[in-house]
Length: 226
Ligand code: CA
View 1: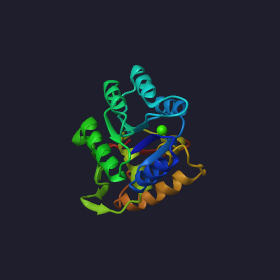
View 2: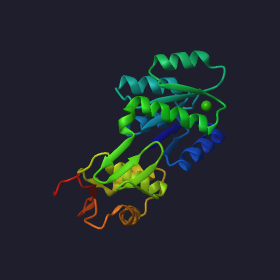
View 3: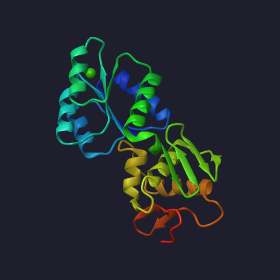
View 4: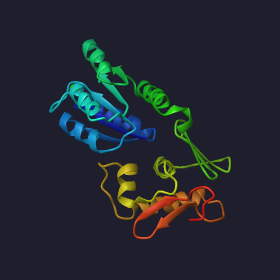
């Protein structure tokens, strides 16, 4: 799961980032409204967490801009207790939910999960390709019905490949999606993680994760030979 946090209060930003990352999210953080808007417009997120009062561009204007441009990424507004008007306006502008500060990370996570269930439908929270099954909410991975221990990074990588079996993902795409933009990329990080992942999900036969020379990787479609 990938989240964008647009929040200028450093204390809130650090605990939200830490809390979400601890639970396996990839998080990009912007402390400026204009940058937040640009990120949300040009990059793919499962959820955007949007503060209202921001330098550069305020949260409601970001939300309005996104919806006007047809970006329907789920948005949760983070509002101060007294910003009732902002909440109402936010919901009118197309926010999916709001959360009043201060809040606990657990509360935020519960809202995110409820929202993602609502948005994507229960079915998509369980991904199945061949003999591999991932539950995106409980973050349990299974091969042939047996649970396998994946690190958070390995889980996110597997999830990314499983979204579109057969599609080839470039290493840079994988880096951006699984490690996030704030991460300093090292050239072979993706390959190392793929190797570790293969050891865990390979079933003795041909690996379901296929290297595509000079490009990147893809997940074999179940039952296909190409
Ligand atoms: Ca603020």
